[in-house]
Length: 552
Image (cartoon, rainbow, N blue to C red):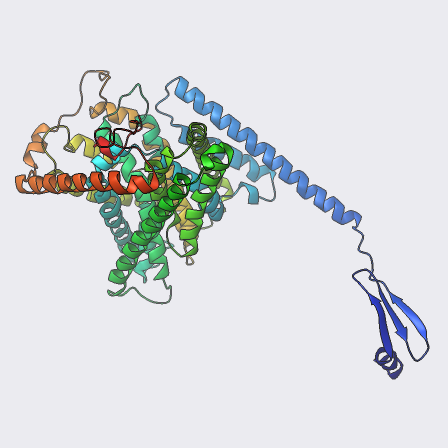
């Protein structure tokens, strides 16, 4: 800057200034200078680019809607014609494969056709998990809570360590490529994510009224699946915190990781329960039920608040949201107006079905749009085998433990039911989403193997569900086609682990717990938070047809 320019700057007075114009008076020359910023007019190129992006988004939205409509119509066709060999989730996957293949050949930018883990965890998954808790058939769930917790917690941990150990050992022996041979924590991360059981295909067939599936079996499969998903996510997050590709796994890390896992689980459940009670208290002690639209909208926002709160504090939003749904169903559903009760139940169910279709659709697209560079067919096949072995290592031993506390007859988990439970361990969207967040240089290898396992178990194993139910005699109302099914009576008598002492102790504890909980819940909790009362204890409350804890 020269001296003349300097004089102008230091001898000038700003008369007026705003965002559009600046007026300066130069004292040395008594001249008024007006500065106006240059106008930024959009160029033709910018307008064309914006229109091109908008048109691409519009075409993608149109294609997605048409695809979802096709998936829904195909699901209707499958249900209407009772095609048990092709579950609705498998239909959505296969449609996704076709759409993904077409997109890979005809579209340069595959972003909108690719599976996004963040979109899955924050948009698609929460409605599915909340609906599972809100519509939970509580009698079957809490009747078998002991066995369900054994499978969901103990079984998931056993499965994670079994798959992780087998993967690490095979990698060290050179049978699997693209796997860290020095750090076992990477293999444990894979074991945790692939332990997420998602038997949507199996449950859709088991839930068919005409099949009349064994009620105990359905309760165990459903109960394990809704808790197992949350447990697997917490376990994956815990192992992820202790993962360091530059360090080897030491013996002190595993106990610390397990302690962190149980701490996160308890705190997540606590967040869900407390927020559920808070919402129930608000609805119970206000007149918001006079405005059905507001109470339904507020309920949905409170549900997402629960998920966001848990995630913001580094906990499991899925675990918190499931128990939040159970608490709201138990207490707050009775505080809603009749209109809001119907609206919320149908809305949550409809959104959950739509989200499930989108999830499986995008998983199918991932076959061609995933861009996996290190797909190892040997790892995929061995990973599937590891899952089957790990599933057997947790289902059969834990079922023996559960039967120690169960009486003879229908309440015991038969060996036939255990075999179906083992077969029902399908892998789904949660396992694939977690694999997309797999750290380290071998993430593509794990993601491609997980996608292969998810698609194989959903399409192939899910398609054989009806045949398995028939062969193992797990259908109550229909006779088998040939009148025969597998008989394991002699084997069951051989491995029977009935313990009269354990059964009596379990029965006494259960009876005391039920008596205490019924009294406490009826006299204190429902007084504060709402809910249905037992007629013989509080006669002025009408008995609801909804299943409750009193239906044990």
